[in-house]
Amino acid sequence: MAKYKLHCFCQSGNSYKVALYLNCAGLDWEPVFVDFMSGATRDAKWREGVNEMGEAPVLDVDGRKLTQSGAILLHLAEKTGKFAPQNEDERFEALRWILFDNHKFTSYFATYRFMLSFLPQPADANVLAFLKGRFDSAAKIVDKHLAKSSFVVGDKPTVADFSFAGYMFYPVEESGYDWAKTYPNINAWIERMRALPGWKDPYELMPGTRIKLFR
Ligand SMILES: N[C@@H](CCC(=O)N[C@@H](CS)C(=O)NCC(=O)O)C(=O)O
Image (cartoon, rainbow, N blue to C red; front, side):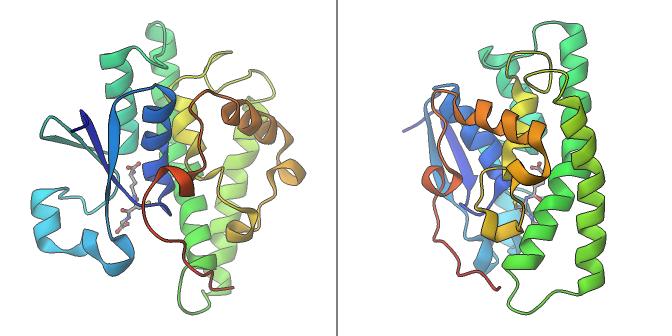
């Protein structure tokens, strides 16, 4: 049995942050499928036994269940040394960008993509426009930042990069975003992440079935 068991599903970029980290760090891990689309995370028993916050990912380490991708990534970096910030300043920077990612980059993008492609009916156009606008203003900040350094914190990949990577490798059809055309510095960073040993596509790395897109 693997040391790290990641509760995840293939559409979940938040889970992919941790799955990709575990794979690139070469750690002993296995996925545990969360049937999110059938409502598993809303089930009271699941919340009681797995995650009271009702979210994936959950990382089971020797029976202890860790949640929140950013907290998990920082914990793993500290325990294993892999993709760890190297000093106090870098640790501060990594946390700062992970919080920005969670609040402004991943969350608006993930919700936009979900509403655009995975709902059974068309989403409200005003809501979509709001989410897209919020994401674009965060993406401009990240694109500008990545013009100055190869990775989020300096010139080596850290856990902060895995946080931002959550939704960047899903197919263009799901979000309509072609990174090369919209955000060139983000796109160049995506290619640097893709080149890391252990990199795999989210649909290859995590369990579940591909969903037919609404659009
Ligand atoms: N901040 C959390 C976000 C996790 C999250 O929102 N996960 C989604 C799946 S990708 C979820 O479980 N959502 C359930 C919900 O919002 O009710 C993290 O980084 O782990």
